[in-house]
Image (cartoon, rainbow, N blue to C red; front, side, top):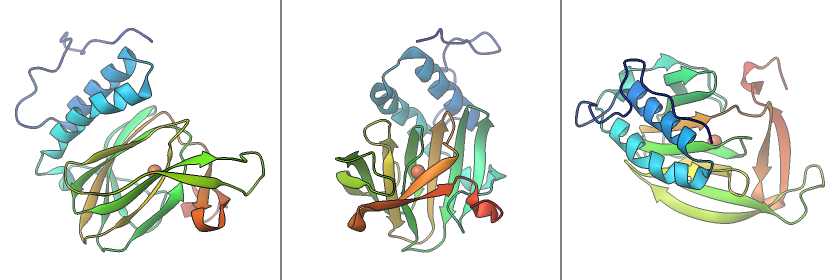
Amino acid sequence: MTTAPSFPDGRTNSTDVPAPFSTARECAWNLIQLLHSTDDLGQFASEAAPHIRKLLLRPDLLVLGVDRATNHGDIASAYLYYDYDFHIVIGSHPKAGATIPVHDHGTWEILAVYRGEIEHTLYRQVGDVATPGHADLEVVENRLLGPMDVVAALPPSAEIHGFTTTRPDTHLVVVVGGHFKPIRRYFQPDTKSYVERHEKSWRGAIR
Ligand SMILES: [Fe+2]
């Protein structure tokens, strides 16, 4: 645990954030403070959810971001907040039935639905974890998530997830702390297997 920083303008909390919603910077600041206050990622994620929901109340999130190249193919994605160690993005999926393959991260990720709906599945890996290409995944949770719903993929036990959009025009806010590992695993739960892919393989030049 480290000491929580104070606001650059001297404030030590965000109680003076204008209601009813917060800025992305305010949301990030609150989450960073929470990260400094605990070493328990589960506690962090549960306490982070109200701050993220406050950001989701904004009616203008779709026009605030800075364009970002995505890790998972043909979706629109934009940064709402970025520093090297922490970022908040909004990802837009125009069609129902779009699937984000089951993947890991190497760090924690919190997902929140801004508009639309997804069927989201969270997994943990069980059994043999030593054989390359093999992964036996156990479902931790499978549920439909709608607006204002928040779910966390947290290492080490439950940081693998995947989802499918179940409504068109689905928009998701994603919060990530730390850094994605450069080589990510993409799983096929039915065959208990995975392939490795570079985190930036969407660029085409890196496989
Ligand atoms: Fe993810």
